[in-house]
Length: 104
Image (cartoon, rainbow, N blue to C red; front, side, top):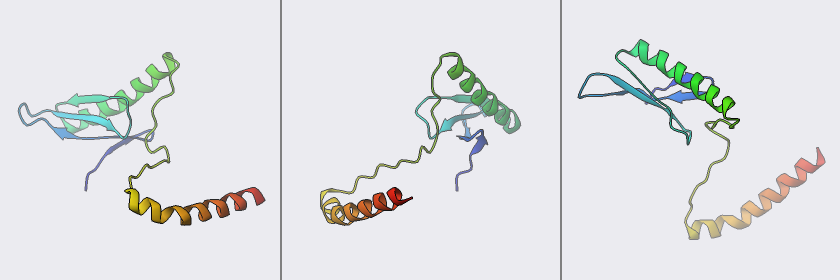
């Protein structure tokens, strides 16, 4: 199981650099590239937190909406045959869901 660093809802990787013995990481599950590097795990954790803080500050200064991990949408490719089989059931399910939402 992969363990991630966590800060303000962002998740960071921990990867060893075999050639020089340092640690490297990047923020996962977003499109923007945020990286960090350090010689020890405690320093890497600190660099991760600082990188997230710097990213959010840069976004504020640029008036840019920061990328958010796990936006709540998931695109899945089913294949044409399975899509064809599921479409009628999904249509009924979506119609029922919409009716329930309107009644609230």
